[in-house]
Image: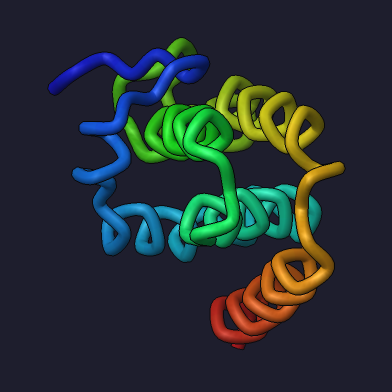
Length: 123
């Protein structure tokens, strides 16, 4: 499996992004990650899908999301909450860099998706 560099996704990575694998991992670890992190992940995900998002931003996002999905990262996710510390740091860094360009619609979709996911996994 290819090692992911979170700072630089490629257009090929963007085209080959495995949405199902991403959403499955997000659901599996939703409780561990917590609402603020899930909301940031969803916001980046919806921003990546938006035709209004510049390609440079999409490549940053796909790099971060692939790092989240990849089992090959600095701290293995199998270590529980500690294992996600590097993933969360990458997500938070990219989110911070792009949040000012995020539309109100994307933020609302992220909040709605987060609440729906947490309701589903906690029931």
